[in-house]
Image (cartoon, rainbow, N blue to C red):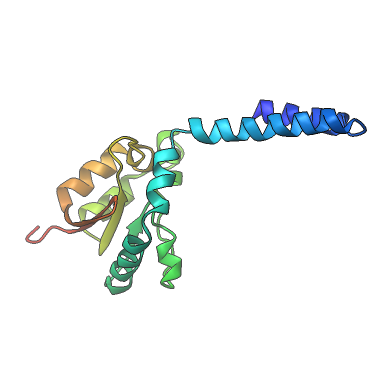
Length: 163
């Protein structure tokens, strides 16, 4: 980011010199390309772009759910179905880790199986779910919910029966 900012400033400074400006613009484009290619999220972006049909299936699951649905990567499906976003996993996890939010009431809700479905996005090569959910949340989800199906890279959890 600092290199891009520096190249942008240099580009503005070299405004009267069109050859220098073109060379700097080329360097800026190269810098942005290298950032994208080197990004650890590249496999995630590529996987998401290839998942149109799974997104439609997940939207159907959200639509049919009788109750509150939690989601991380697929959180955008909730407002598409006219639902409120009850919980933002990444933001709340960061607050919990910083000691700025007490996750116990949320863990209690997970324990009570208060959620009709939980859509948890998992790519083995990039464990994003560990940045989006605390270890305690993941442990409670695994104990009180069961993976009903996997659609693309999203695991659909439902409350465990008999619990």
